[in-house]
Image 1 (tube, rainbow, N blue to C red):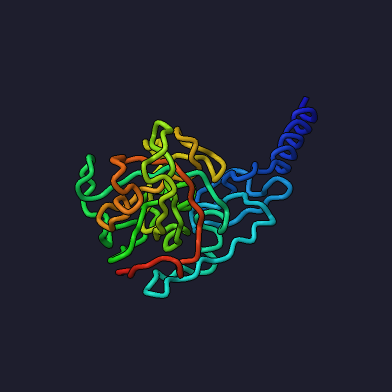
Image 2 (image 1 turned 120 degrees about the vertical axis):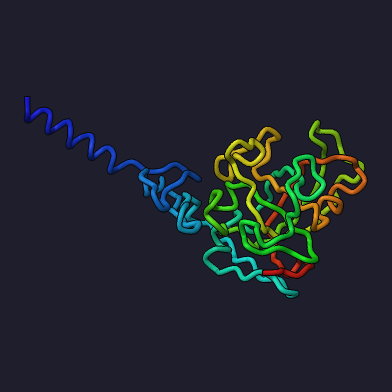
Length: 240
């Protein structure tokens, strides 16, 4: 009986040891106790101290360059692993926060952002947690300082905006947390929110990003596309 129990224990251990995390699943980070190896074709990439994710082994995302005006410093390792693959177009939803919004979030252009800096001038936004790279209280995520080209197409009901196709470029300065916030609780970069968006960008009202993207459409939530671009295409100044 003891021998059989030992065999079952060894078998169970072997099964656990051979397990592998699924594509785009978490595979590491401080306090993480799950599978730290990824399924075939994927590799575990660190997104800071608290989060690592299984990403395609062929992912050759290039680091986002800093702004020619005064972009936030972004290390090569962070830029390569945060925000998603540079050049990949994602479906995205766009909301707004800051002074004057219905939730009274206050001025979003302050040093109290998760990234610790803001833009003045220059369009900025908070990015959904799945792409920001870390959760609330963990400080600056790997996506801090990355720049994104946002294109609005429809309102929340799927109707074309009066300015459909309008495009702006924003720099990421803050986190849109997943907890209690369905818009920003996507699971990995392939997960979606209720609008089918892989990412959500919460546009900083105080930077003027919401007005620039939504125009006179009269909406506060839009759906469209987002692609990470070089910050040389972004126009603004970073304040630390």
